[in-house]
Image 1 (cartoon, rainbow, N blue to C red):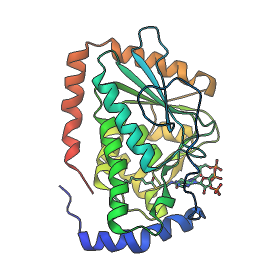
Image 2: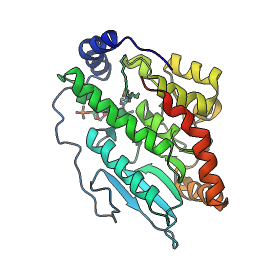
Image 3: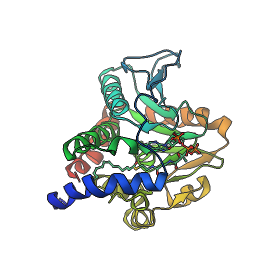
Image 4: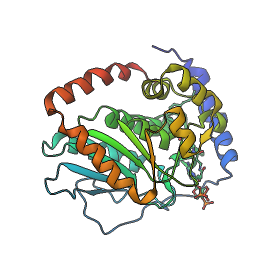
Length: 271
Ligand SMILES: CCCCC/C=C\C/C=C\CCC/C=C/C(=O)SCCNC(=O)CCNC(=O)[C@H](O)C(C)(C)COP(=O)(O)OP(=O)(O)OC[C@H]1O[C@@H](n2cnc3c(N)ncnc32)[C@H](O)[C@@H]1OP(=O)(O)O
């Protein structure tokens, strides 16, 4: 278990992190409410317009879940909580077997943490916000469902983490980036994110990817293992469905127990 100096972490979070991150992005503070957009699709129990769900196969076994937080799917606390609730609901629904995670936005899968949420907040508030993201990621990572990320645009930092929580990642060709740029924006990588990255990429590659903070093109992302496949944008969802169909062909009980055994060890990591 990694030990963190709590005082250092606390003063870092309060004093340095919001400034560094937002200076890097050139973004301001006043974003309250701007991400709350609606949509006319069918909804299943997310309790929020921030996550759109379609169960469009005839057996309702495959669920397509679309992140819908305009303009860049920054992970607000409300979004994180809605995702967590939704995945838990789907986990509890025996009919659901597989999940495709994608975005309603044409060029962005997710821009990661909502950096503006860090402005002017107390240590406890920021910690609480981080924990909503971590809970969402853990819930997705350990979901009993088979999971495929259909990455239809930029997947940066926390956006890349969300994809890494899935079992398989397909990315659309295009002028998009995929990467873990936390060290560039001034966030020391949390141990649990490193553990997930090591799990997906192997230790050596994960270290290079994390410590460089590099944002990869889809082809580069394929080379380092951040994604498993790159396809033309128009094929993204169908390819993802095909992969998911193969994944869920395997016997449900041995599959879910094996996934649980493989992944639960990683839950010991926190900061
Ligand atoms: C020791 C202490 C450590 C403690 C840590 C412990 C736990 C932490 C828990 C979890 C951490 C997990 C790690 C995750 C970290 C992160 O996710 S940090 C976030 C880093 N994200 C980025 O760097 C992405 C930045 N965005 C972009 O690169 C681009 O916006 C884009 C996604 C490529 C899209 O580009 P484009 O289509 O050109 O759109 P714009 O750049 O014009 O952006 C549109 C508006 O959206 C705003 N915005 C962009 N990203 C964010 C964001 N992440 N949060 C909030 N807002 C964002 C941008 O400012 C634009 O706004 P305006 O229109 O200008 O108002």
